[in-house]
Image 1: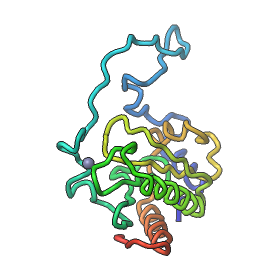
Image 2: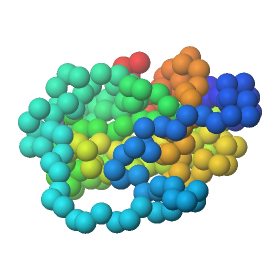
Image 3: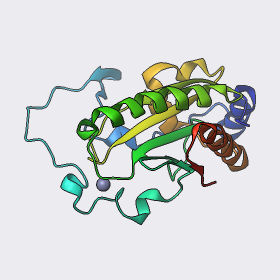
Image 4: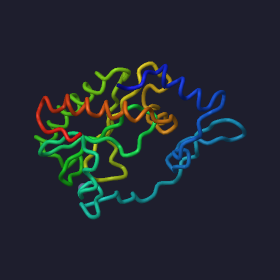
Length: 203
Ligand SMILES: [Zn+2]
């Protein structure tokens, strides 16, 4: 299953030696909060406020999660929800999305669906943290880029203490992905455990 921290570390060292991994694109994002000034890392100056930008798929128009593309890669589903990995792997061993089939904003969920989010979130986090070599599963709901309801789950490698907390998201962009066969085995294990509570496995 998931690669051990020692194996992961050895692979990165073999790749870069005393050097550094390349900086990820996130450093170019307008929301990236740091810059270098006179050789020191400093916080960027706060930009003046502006109008909110519309999110992808607003109102269900041209929503990439509503059409058949949205379900690609699904490992588990029931009549309301699906779980799938991101199509592109990065440094964290497992990143999953919990999404509705129907076009709903997170805040559109009714009381029953909201309760389902709670149960599925705890269940999924428990399953991810039960995988060998994954210490923690972080959960995030931002919804800044896409309106369609989606919740993030980030598995963090056990023993890679530098990647703890919210910086795990940054390290996910920096570190190279692990072996694909281990990733697929983890996905199958997550789906197998989820289906013991219902739904169907698609992996
Ligand atoms: Zn949608």
